[in-house]
Length: 143
Image (cartoon, rainbow, N blue to C red; front, side):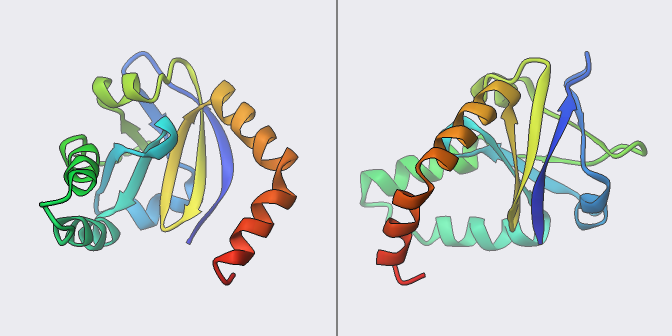
């Protein structure tokens, strides 16, 4: 399970460190892709296979299904950590998320998210400021 948030710098070769506690889960490789809210999502290979299968089963006759599949699958790239526990972010994904120098890696249960630091701080403040409203809406879903 991935949880927590960690701040890192992106180096000149577009590499970012993976938090030490998550490295073993990604040791056999991982997939990075476009996420929602203009961040990047990183999945361990085993989790990605489940996600990709679910996406492949969406009805291709529905425009939103096709668009979501394109967003997730066409942007996906398989990546490996180097010996120092860093991953290389493809330029097109770094551009999609508007990541420059400072980034935040967030654990979100079955995936990691990578955000530009400033965007994450704004998003986090908004979540914190609206936590009661968010909780009420989640309660409607039965949680």
